[in-house]
Length: 349
Picture 1 (cartoon, helix red, strand yellow):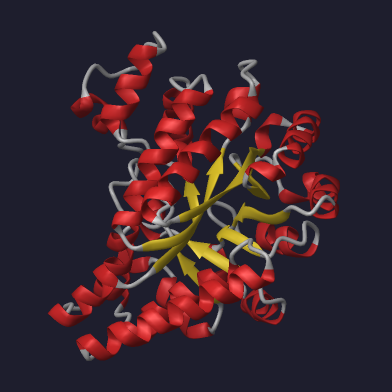
Picture 2: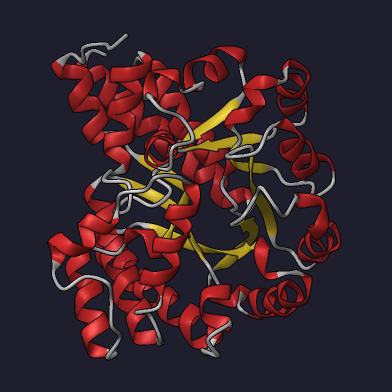
């Protein structure tokens, strides 16, 4: 069932302050920028123009998506590239009234090509810092390790993540091939990340069932689960997530385009929300999935019938779940609460 969006609610969605926690830097690059960087770096892409790049964003399944992601990431080779795409992303997020975001980079894509990850991370941090100076949006980085690359590389990349904590790296996660590389392989890596002061998340329950989420929560001690929608298949897991205060970073358009949920009306978003699971709303790879965070909030209203109260709670969930020091998190939550209250009063929603 589709729901109409009243003009006042639509305006509220557009103007409300937002937070995003599940966003891949590589999946946010505008096609024109990607082509320009590839030309600058003398990298051949399987596309000659913007229309050709956009044509690549059609996937039969999740594996197709990973292949396209990897191919396009090859265009990025130096800190200048990452500074440019981070700066552009910062402005894009500020245009949507984002106050805070956590952006993942996929370190194996660069480490395996012998690139300087310190330069890459610090380039991205510089781009985000410049965007913050100009627009006020605060953005931190999370290393999202492709679990299919194995334990040995994970340890090396964790060391680099820890070394770059002064450069806005706040978290460690695993993504990639969930079907063939279960979370429990990385238990010791996650323990080490947490001891070093990194906060942790894990992609789980996207293309694999509840067992993947159980392992990510109980063995990896992840406090946020990327996607996690297959938790709907296990009522005991739902209650466990609520009890452990684990938050699901849900990305509906991503799930549609990768074939995880099709049609979107079968997505368990509303069921999870009604069950009381902590949830946030995110884009995952916004350019790859033809969306923005504002679009995702409109989708939540149009497809899942969310009202202003529920949409505001999704934003506040994200602020509470952010990988920020407690004093910064409290300030962010308080600021969002004030702005949302004023906006709801002004629009009568």
